[in-house]
Length: 633
Image (cartoon, rainbow, N blue to C red; front, side, top):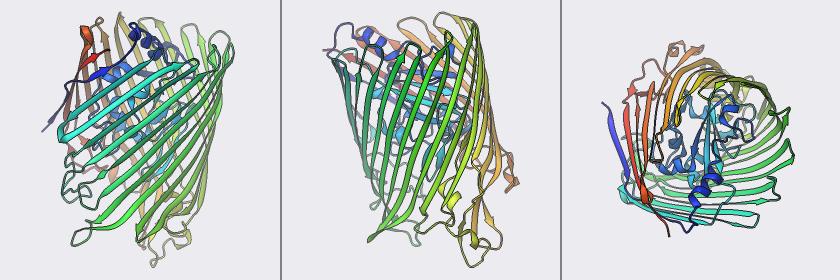
């Protein structure tokens, strides 16, 4: 039986001391028309790139309701993206392109970010737009060394690039306040201004709530009381334009403080997330641009554990656990326009990641302690031959893991490394302004987790019935994937756009855990393949200045096609992937600053486990409405 969820934000007051033509000014400054940069790292019109890239503008972001405050929910309004956010305290466990969302790359101004942490930490008021590239992985962007319990992240199913605001057209201040269910109280502010060549913005967002029990009896989420929380975000960005030709340097910093409890007396938590980006862009010649970027991501998590798993169950404090995770990504690229409009992009990127866990029971005991590095070299050429556009590129990756501790002890194998060659190509034929055809093919990979590589016991102990634990696998390979998509874009009339797209993704060498014969041990091996295929149709229509609407449908079939360790799983559906997803919405603009947006999303049932015997969870319909009155002073 389907459940109906309804969320409505009735009124938002926004004060903005701006000049009379501020709205037109911002449209020129922030929206950049229909320009996109994710395809080639240079501004291009959508008709000049082979990939399918959807744009969510700042204005559209402001009209969407994010029920759990997660940026993944913003992407769920586009085809192929399913957001499955447990609560306003938790991460997204959805899917993209029929695979877990860890097979989609997420970036902030072209540098990778964490799909679990940053999507619930970053604030959308800082964004100029979002570019969602669906389909085969681009060689221009790397995998992300999350190094967390959920493993690393790969852009096999696509890439979402959150583009920060940069140039300020006029001084502007915005503020909003809200109150809702569960005594949820919040407020946001944002200010931007330009002082000569220096363009600045800063903002903040605070929310606290008594919240509600979203746990399940007998599970780790079982709750005795409302799970109260507080969340505070502060951010700023400064961009200095060094000349009139686009040479500029910028820095962005964001921090989130997230405290609360999980609904039990000794289940408090306190997390601090820091995200920093710095960049330099120099169009040093008429047809050449160099870009250099570096970032810092620091995720500090602390939480209490009680004895709910004991027999009998206990609510007494058992430990205070923690994770310290940091990643430094960097990228340098050179883009050269050859002939009239061909684009050659070459570059290199780097990541340094560290991951430490600890447990405090009277004194602090270390758990995991590991570092990882990734180096990538890439090149891509885009040829524009009148109506035909061809794209081809390659990437060479070097990834290494070094493990000092695993579960508090030296690992069975303390290091491993992999070299990987990837490719990506595509073609687009612009028959006319009303019709375009495109196709893309690309490969990607995801490095094994710490436990897969290092194990918890020495490799020499494999098969020893007196030694229990997880055996290291020095021969384990990264998961590899190949993605293909083909589509058509139609524009039957002014303001009306129709898109059709089909996709197929093969994921090979999937990592599975197996039991070691005659010993209380387990090990990870490359054991299986998964195939996901589907089709998307989307319609967007701007009737006039007052009415816009959209509709889309996605069909996805995702299942295990091979499992040498457990053949009974062949044919099992992939978890958290709805077979059918429908999205519709309408946006209305009235005189005197009144605006209204109504959306509905329908999802078929999903599987929670990968098993041929798994039962489906009920599908549901989610409806959201937002009415906004803008007040200008």
